[in-house]
Length: 367
Image 1 (cartoon, rainbow, N blue to C red):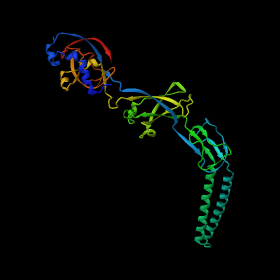
Image 2: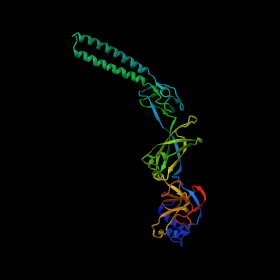
Image 3: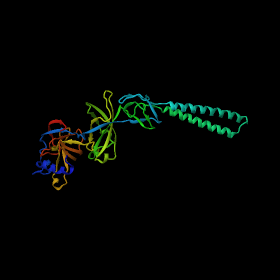
Image 4: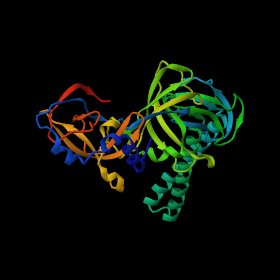
């Protein structure tokens, strides 16, 4: 790609036949025969493709993943799942031996029943003036403590069951049946299999072209090494603000829905193809043949302007100033002065007059 600073020299070299021994376009206009109809190759201006497809090596991860653990300690009594098994939301996964917890509930229940009975008795006596209010308050407090203890015991008993928080798959078991485990000790890794993450490292030189705020520009396709004939659409999720582990790259993550027909697991390798904009601010660029662009003789003074010959519906030409953006291998990219659908002369002739009529040799689209 050639930048704008160098395009003037290139145009001068290409247009030397236009400028050598000639006067300016305005002076030439006076010398043309108005009635002369010249043949000229005409093309229709099309939008420049602002995107370039890049392919990145990516790795699959779980969009929703968690380490399941019991909220109480104890001995694993039941572990009814194996690695890779699909589990529905709310389905029982494992249990602890609940013997001790059941005993705690029974004891707490008995203490609560006693405290409640004593409080009701003192309340009746207090209403008859046979007991003091302070005695009633004391038994009320004891009854409330017994009630809280019973509720906590019931909750601990409930915690001896481990259920799936969402529909997913068991990725890895960390314990075995009859193992003694502590509070919050991971029992198994559980993942949402239908929603996956696809992550790759974006080189530093491409970060400027990757604007997360303009997601419409990012069309990602994922092809897994295990399923080379299947493309899966992915949507942008996030990009790290800091470089990955001190490297000159930034971790970018996309999300994708796994097809039911495929068995996709975290850690699988994939290629992610992404259409990156050349410049997100250049949505209105057009591309024309380099030969269609010419410059006036002010180029010798370093003050040149770029022009093309625009053809109207009557096949008459007009010199149109354009804003030159850059040169690519297949043409010149124009940032202003031309619109998609306009007709121009594909190769600027050495002698052409403003308003001169031409005979199109062919009507072609693009380059």
